[in-house]
Amino acid sequence: MNSWFGISFILITYLIFLAMRHVYNRFRMPLLNPVATTTLLIIVGLLLTDLSYDTYMLGGWWIQELLGPAVVALAYPLYHQRKKILRYRVPLIAGLFSGIVVGMVTGFIYVKVANLSSMYASSFLPKSVTSPIAMEIADLTGGLPSLAAALVILSGIIGALFGPGLMRLLGITHYLGIGVGLGCAAHGIGTAKAMEYGEEEAAFSSISMTLSALLYALILPVAIHYLL
Image (cartoon, rainbow, N blue to C red; front, side, top):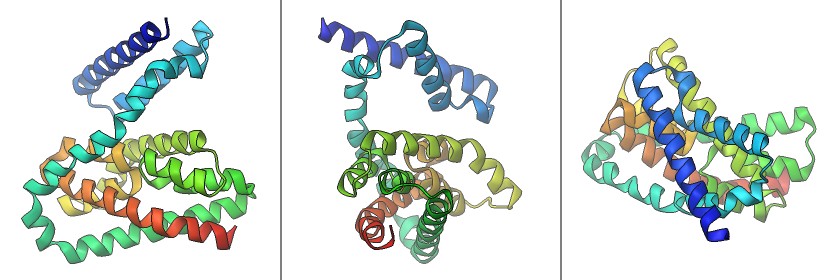
């Protein structure tokens, strides 16, 4: 029975996502981002049918496990655009470190202002990295991995929704700036958004997401230990 539940939830999630992606491609409105709309519809569906999160995760777990291979697959645009990445390595590194510093500093400021407990702070602070790494950081520092994953998705959706408009407002049009901005701020969901711009934006977003996640994994647990 559990196997049938799992397969059903995988298919339902996939079909909803395909439908929402079709709607997004038809109207091209930021608020119709397929990740956001699919998540919202699934939440509404679970509430209406009174299904628990654990029941849904009989199938959702397999989708979650595909996050790792999906991140690895982003190596293709990196390889294809390797010459441009090497050419712009200095501004890439500068933008990467700027994004990491801003993300960490603003995160710690919010934690202090909101007076969050250590557990919730450790769940909130990894919001700017991919879900698998955020969950590991939260687990290592006494946070809640499931909450960390939810906050990662939320920050990614917000970044993908409002990032493009903010960059237009600031006059950022170069593929390097777009890619690094979306990759650092909105990780995997931002990289998916960067792919809509082109392969160059996707490559810079992918490498920014990957490198920032590695640096966060090294620095953030130490910062949490000493600053919280």
